[in-house]
Length: 250
Image 1 (cartoon, one colour):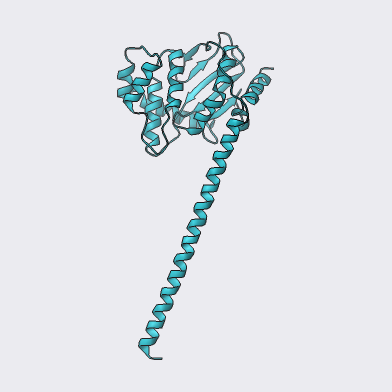
Image 2 (cartoon, rainbow, N blue to C red; image 1 turned 180 degrees about the vertical axis):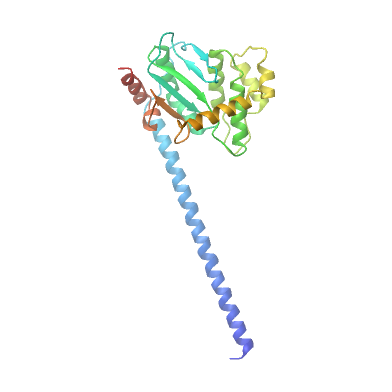
């Protein structure tokens, strides 16, 4: 075999080897994609099971009084109720937090109204990439602009109802202002507060403080009952959550 023929043969072998490697890489990428999809579906399916594992309650009456703390958290409790304490760490952009609201928020509100629990809401920002980061900052900063407790809760619920997908820009300023009015917010400084996002820095500082404290271990929502983290299987099951709170009061 001449040199030219050997060179052609060598080039063909190299070409074939590269083609084989390319196909192997494609198969590996496909396997990775399939694995990721399976994991995501398992997580979604698990979350859906949590939501469906117990019937949601309906609101039975008026809310317990809601007050604003100096750090921006909100306390919902009847006068004199100091325990058990249920801390709820949530992000208005978080889909799992929205699912929790849909499944278990009525239970929390009913029990607070009945004087069975003191609830502390901690809106925080867990997202660090756009557009979700900007979404959560706008929403949480706007929530800080609502001084009245009952109106705050109505706005809180409206934010979760209007939650955008994590991959899309949402919680537009105009929408936040409109939703505030729909929630009954009458404070004359609300609109300017929302539009200027004057609470963004304070909200970011509070979120950092919460994360630095170590109370968030697996993301949001995180529920802590008398300081002990509640498993998601309990948090997303209204009947189980009610029992856990009643047991904590004993």
